[in-house]
Amino acid sequence: MGRIYNFSAGPATLPEAVLQEAAEEMLDYRGTGMSVMEMSHRSKAYETIHNEAIADLRELMNIPDNYKVLFLQGGASTQFAMIPMNLMKNRVADYIITGQWAKKAYKEAQLYGKANAIASSEDKMFTYIPDCSDLPISPDADYVYICQNNTVFGTKFHTLPNTKGKLLVADVSSCFLSEPIDVTKYGIVYGGVQKNVGPAGTVIVIIREDLITDDVLPGTPTMLRYKTHADSNSLYNTPPTYGIYICGKVFKWLKQRGGLTAMRDYNEKKAAILYDYLDHSQMFKGTVEKKDRSLMNVPFVTGNPDLDAKFIQEAKERGLENLKGYRTVGGMRASIYNAMPMDGVIALVEFMREFERRNG
Image: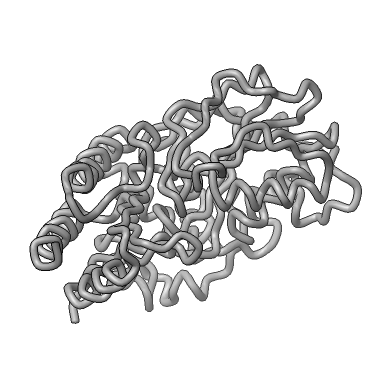
């Protein structure tokens, strides 16, 4: 069997060119006689891979000099604790709850101080982004937290909240590098890489330098201090070297494709094909308010669980894999990250059209 179209929410599809290049270098990375997997993180060859990846990411995202790029482990979920441990000086933080991952981050922050849910879209099953233009920001809040793109429910902040001068912290795991962002609008922007950037096991944190201090909550472990990693260029301990190596290749692939502006244009065209079909279909319906739709994660339903199950099974037989919706939501979800080709979205829509004709 050849390559399928993989619509998984993560770990997700990676650029085929990157996988081929990694395969060619698997046994002998550029004359070293070994795989990057076997290489010391203190070696010259790995140091070059590491530093090039940081430099390429800085260039792609136009990251200012007063921000550090950190390659960490523990996924986005460890950041749910690391952020309050490092930033909650007043023991107060405001959270905007727009889905499962923001909710988990909010619950975790409650272990360290007073976490306030200042807006939520849970009343309508997280199918929209609440109005964040005039929120009840706490006067002593250390930061305001958002999950910018919601993988499970398929919503996206197209306008950042008005934090009234407070620090903005954002989890961008499922929209990372899908479009340009203005890094200066955030204190911390971070994401697990297993959706748009690389293999599971690496998280990238972009953090403003003035937030990297020894002034952390008492009892914060050495490994959960941003300063530990910033002071050692993410080499305090053995980093996820192979993950970083693949991320570096993806950064180069993005640069070759014209950078993040070109990527956004491509992603908008891809998403439009699927959303346009959903808006005109008699059988399939998108579940998100139009103005808040994600370019990366597209949930949809037929309204009939048996028909949903039939669709998912028949799609799989056509090489359209991992279209089942998140377990708590049901229905279907197509994750169409950077590496999902236009042809994959076209193949999905063609199959949906045919399925609708046969079962309508």
